[in-house]
Amino acid sequence: MKKMVIFDPAMCCSTGVCGPSVDKNLLRVSTVLNRLEKKGVKVERHNLSNNPKIFVDNKIVNKLLVDEGVDVLPITIVDGEVVKTKEYPTNEEFVKLLEIPKEYIMSELKAKKEKKSNNGCCGGSGCC
Image (cartoon, rainbow, N blue to C red; front, side, top):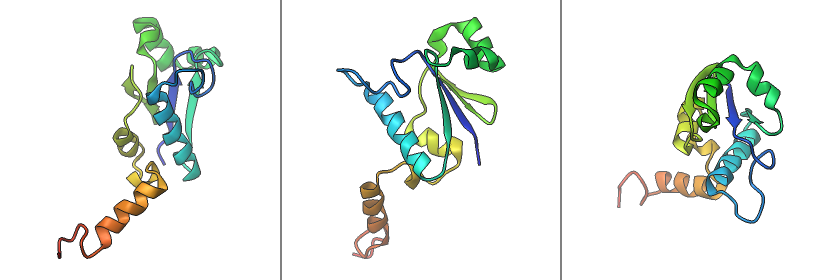
């Protein structure tokens, strides 16, 4: 199984999903990571304000921060290689980078609808 680690910029809490105006992208990432955890896929996430030492200890992240500054965050690493900087992975990228079924990050309702539409007489087979 692939190992993903996300190095977040400084945020007010571990997910950044708090306060009066919630960042929709952070909410999406947090939701995806919760769904992945329920499926047994663990993604490490480090917040610069909560654990700055790990940013210094990781040579790759430290070099990127020295060379490009904090604007390079978030940094996503898969199996020791940087796969994305300055933005969080999209849902499609989570699926591709972790080599997981897309159903892992879909809501249960959406997954049921998609499965039903692919299996029914009037679904993806086109028999109607």
